[in-house]
Length: 150
Image (cartoon, rainbow, N blue to C red; front, side, top):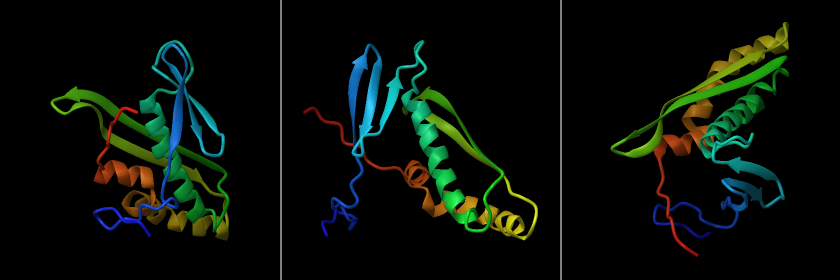
């Protein structure tokens, strides 16, 4: 195992990465190692997600996956929505988001299985915020970002 200065595993097994390529003026495509593509735009007239929207989508997606895995062991939801919002500000720290709020709305079927899923839902939401959601935890604890030119 290769560790960084904090003792964190920095092997290929822990590495997450993607590439971003320009496809037009103010438009890019993000491509993951499995060939998945997500268009990214600068917020002009195109329907592409902006980088901030992708960050919010990542937080919502991470939350939904964690909560869904926990509650889904008890019952399949009849409806499942996650709403994420925050305010983009510019202050002495530069541009950033503040007051991020994640709202999970799940409706489970009536009956014993649905009751079990409803029972674990609050703890599942708490766990995703406290320790499970990598996106949310990264935003909460922060990390260094190295910028360089190739």
